[in-house]
Image (cartoon, rainbow over all chains, first blue to last red):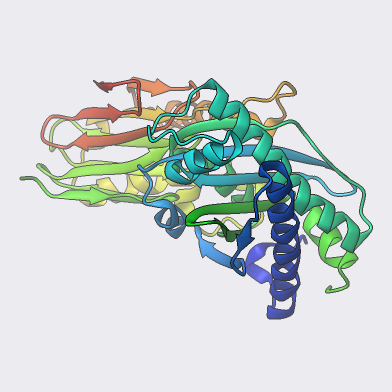
Length: 204
Length: 161
């Protein structure tokens, strides 16, 4: 019987939270290097939520959001999804491209920049995970979608839904000057991989 | 104004006319509307996965196409819907992210739609309209007074089926 998010105890949650912390820290450093400015972050919050409450975090199921999706392969398999509200996405691309475009719309350049940012964020997270667990992990190229939050979230929710009724997400706020970028990060190990992951972290 | 009843993910609900049933932001999930043309009793279920038999944790019937449709059918019949007058409309089942190697899980939208159609066929419920597939999200509203299903998207307009 595989382990699902629904069955996690508080120690296991704390360990996953700590990885979230380290991963986000590395991501902030990487972002900082990329834009040559100091990027701070708050302490990430790890939320374990029922499906129906997830969309509320990003403004409801009809809010337009950006989802960046990766597949994870190697010793464990699974998926990573980064969810950004549109405002945060635009702020990130503005930072990256040293400009101040106040428009709401995301053009080709923005999308390509977001994919690159997604690479950095999930790469930082995965490399922390890999270092801590000694697991060999690789990730795919990103796939990006801009649409209703409910529709984008249906992807991680379905993946989680095969084993349980809850999802786990890590919420981080990156701060550069007066700008705040809110990002939500889903790590979704496949059914059998979750146990491998927790085992290699020494918490099963 | 008719009452608007929200149906969440892996959830279902029913109404008498003139109630309106809605589910917001359907992606790879499928929204299945059952509608009795004689009594106007309506039901909507928002399923996430095709088959309850493939999953260990299958307590929530509304999560799956097979158990979700059967439960919804039972619910509206209990409310007085006539079995022979029940028709269906479906929407959703899109593929939100594209990858070259289309593994099963990435094609979950298509599989949800296929499973839904199979179950409807087995139950002898006519499928009179659908808006499925693509790579975008949909919000749907079922008007029990008319049986019309309204589909809203971001950037792809609104349509009725």
